[in-house]
View 1: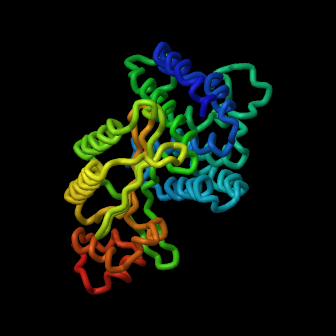
View 2 (view 1 turned 90 degrees about the vertical axis):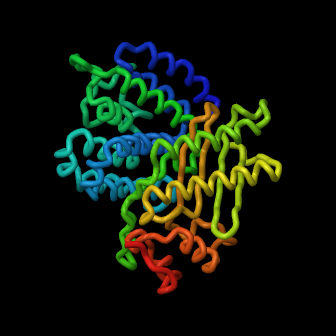
View 3 (view 1 turned 180 degrees about the vertical axis):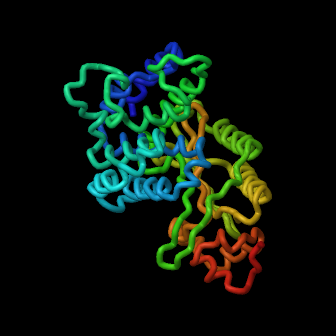
Length: 358
């Protein structure tokens, strides 16, 4: 992480002073090599793809294969499911099909081949001489660069009129923040993948949810600000992890990046729990049929930016203490959902005790 911090200010300055807003391949190569972990580098690439997904949700929603490949990447990178060799097979299998989707498809292909080759296209470029992305064939462009092209809507090496450079700069500044957090919390998803999760055994598909809006983000801003105000000044430069589980009772854990617990007084802890419960209620009111989450994890970086990860459907992720059917049923009574947003295990608990929303 210290290596990343050394590069951070330098690369931020490069982005801000660049007339095109582009972060050079040479700088990214140095940054990725300083991380010295192909697993983390591929997680960074994966999160670049997810950032594109967030800004192009319609295109992803229209192609189940995009989601399927991303989910396989997530399972391999974060849950150690599968083997890296499978991504070379996926690359070869879908290469012709995905290239028809231009940049989006090629970005996903790039993610697959980088996972398969331990990020060779940035960590071990053949006879690399410091050249930028434009000197290489598009087949070896990395996901971070593909994401820049898609999000900005233009190529930094092609002169065009009325190009919004701010989009490109915003993307790369986001990228630097993301890299810092991924390096500090490599085992935690930076951006949760909201996927049409298929329960293969019981043939249940959970649709994507969309309960977040600007008002909700402002409420989370307030929660994180309150927590940061309670942190000792000498600790403010560390990342903070907030874990909150709530059914009939609440469990709140706040820790630093090194695992040490953040100790709060009872009044502050109750205030934060109340705020998180109220946020859950507000999210539910936005789209009731999608249900309410059981858990949330918030990762707060040292510059106060944060990421959110919700658990609506995963029984195994819940602490054993909370895997009580009566407690779970109590939450569903307070926040009923439609059947399409109810996984098989939860349907078994609900039975005929609670009516689903239409």
